[in-house]
Image: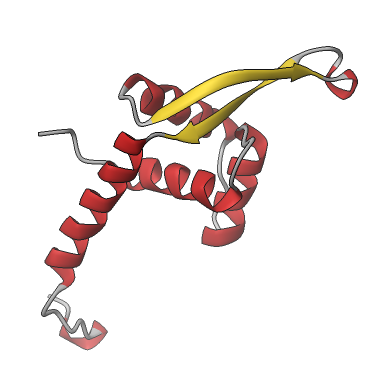
Length: 109
């Protein structure tokens, strides 16, 4: 069985899917912050991107060099089929855990 995805890993993969093609780190950071309302450390995203690629859930490639970056190329990423499958499995597991619960704040123990 594949390792389950952590919450932040899910957020990173979902941000990439929302952003579409030619995605790289900075827009991923911005998308997570915009959608969740929480501050995101760019380093946390880059470490997570590397870990997701090592797991085979992302693929990356170097884009073309740009003058605005002093001739440096950006590393772009896309979610792989395995990444999509992992996201679906994570959602299914969480949906299963939530099913049948009607949480009332007053009923918390």
